[in-house]
Amino acid sequence: MEIHLDTVIRLMSVGASALLLMMILVGNVRRSLKIVVTGLLIGGAAYQINSSTFLKLDRAIELALDLISLSTPFWTWLFARILFERLTPNWFIGFLALVYIVGWYLANFIDPPKGVGFYLIHITSLLLVADLIYLSVSGLADDLVHRRRMVRIYLPILVGLQAGGILIYELWFGTTTNNLTVQIVNGSLIFALVLFGGLAFLKTDTSILIKNAENSSAPEKTSDLSASETVLNDKLMIAMENGQYRETGLTIQKLAKHLATPEHRLRALINQKLGHRNFSSFLNGHRISEAKEKLADRELVDLPILTIAMDLGYNSLAPFNRAFRAETGKTPSDFRRSAIDQN
Image (cartoon, rainbow, N blue to C red; front, top):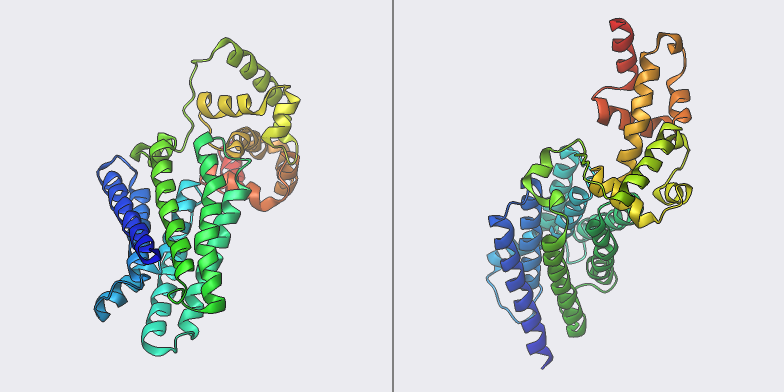
């Protein structure tokens, strides 16, 4: 009965992965997510097949499935970073891919069963899982897209239980093939992840998934406001004009309290009506606008950039520099130099 249950769970997971993959390949999903989700689904399906004790495969097929399946934590991590709009340098992605290939080669052709390759793959995967959990939790308050916030809550729980749990188990006890109960639990968690992925794909805000979103950097504003939204928007604009955005450590919770309005209403206004997907982008729009005025002012040419950053509510110079460069394509120093020269 247990053998039957394990096999059924794995076949259901592989079938669900194939169905979701077809939906994504023919859908209008943006290219970056399409590539990553394809790798994630194929990797998960390969893991379900490769880790089964009831399927006897040719050695070459096992090696290929092993290489594909061990990359699943990498694809999951990359999916989260793209979905949550956290850019990752291409060189780092390539470096991680090389780490997995080297680890796979060492584990299958050079090392003993628990040698350098085994630990290289497992420790790297655990670090990626930890980063995914941190990324999800740390950006939860800042994220204004309701359905994506739900993904931030449930994705780290499932990934932590499945990927994190099985990686720690294998580091401590070795392979899972000797414990049928662990296999069933592991297979069930992977199946749950696939179902959750399908649900997220179907229900997540289309502005995150569709192709046009890949090229949309500026928020799209709308004037279609209800009476209550108009009143709240007026209160918000007055607060911004009075410099509320300069408050250090300002969060949407604090701003909602200052405006005497429920947080969910303020989130909906800034996201759905003003077009911002993160509260930080809303704040940076006001902060960087003032920063550009000060940097272009000849009377303030000797005012240190750090002072400007601190006056605008940044805790240090680094986040100000990142936000300014993202907004203008220039560093604050370069912007000041060109603005002063033009004046």
